[in-house]
Length: 316
Image (cartoon, rainbow, N blue to C red):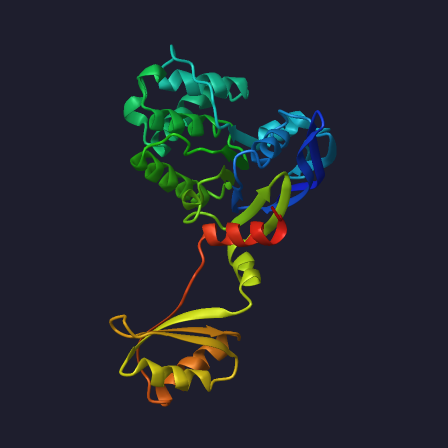
């Protein structure tokens, strides 16, 4: 993948307070990049700099090779930005709202009607085409605002806390919409402090806290770097202690814990090795007389990743 977004030593002070410290970030084209961190971590500051709305104290940033600081007009044509608090024009109808922004981006008048209809269809608001913005629900306003970010067909969508304040149904609808945008080859940078919102959609993540980027890269690569070993949940028939004894004979076993009260009895096997070794471990159990009914690796979610990275990198 080619790099679409890059920052070098990006730093921002507010008075004597540092909000962003030497941020070095890369986002590949086509990625859905989850920007994770608590409130006040520096997510919005980063996004405002990348969208030319805020000047950094030092450092550089590029979008598709265009400098955010030296070529702001070019960057604005490459980026669609949805801030955490966005303005809508209550006395406009939904189609007028989109038409206004399309005209602002100098989309030709003869193309705007088609683009507006396509965007309203994409965000499932075609039935609200002539409705006044002030009469839309918050979830509908969020989807309309997302449509507005795409009127000029940008390469990159930057979405700051897009699910903030939405009810559960609206969050599901937004999540499905973002999946569809990814299928349209849009690169998406999305921030949130609610990690479950990002877990199902992100290909890459960046973890930021107190203005410092602690980890960045593919979700699976970060998970592998945090787990030099694997933990497997194994359900067995018969005596779990005997099964544990067989497991401990295999090279690379770090620990085996039994859970005999479970139905069926369960082992937790902590193993350090590669994929071939994992396959050989299962074969070893079966040939050793263990009746295995379930064998699966335990996976970490984004909350696990965030806690491990922040606990390791930023002492309290």
